[in-house]
Length: 213
Image (cartoon, rainbow, N blue to C red; front, side):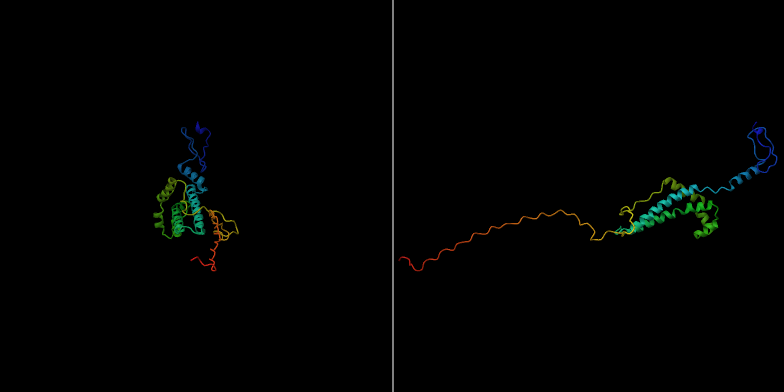
């Protein structure tokens, strides 16, 4: 009954096809026509790179945040001595981990190993072995298990505050800095000294009278 409403001509080549009395109604006269029709349906569609794109966008967002942390560390007047170098190395490690997914995406879009090897400074055999499908898939799987891209918070650096245009970057001048608050020292009460009363000198003996003998 399924063949009642089906055409007796092949949808691919237009030739007459053999009608079957049982099973699913056919549309093509042979396997060759069916495969050719499938190829034509998918010929105009671009390759699916959504798995690569999700991973790359997530990691690049985290890398942009690490670049902002590095810039803030360089603008900080007194950061930790090793902080800028530590942030730079962390950024380099993240970018190096993006190479396998980016190579896999480029290959899926149709680039040859010769082109990819020339961009990476390798020959086609070396780049094919170093970035084979298992290596690329392992990088995507590791990122999927690890979850969303996270970045370690910078140490000894306060969160970045945007500086309005026209204002200098750094601490304010000494004249504009507020004096440190200090508790006032109580002033001792002055000591009042009472002057001594003037002493009256003893009267001198009268020389005109002689003592009785």
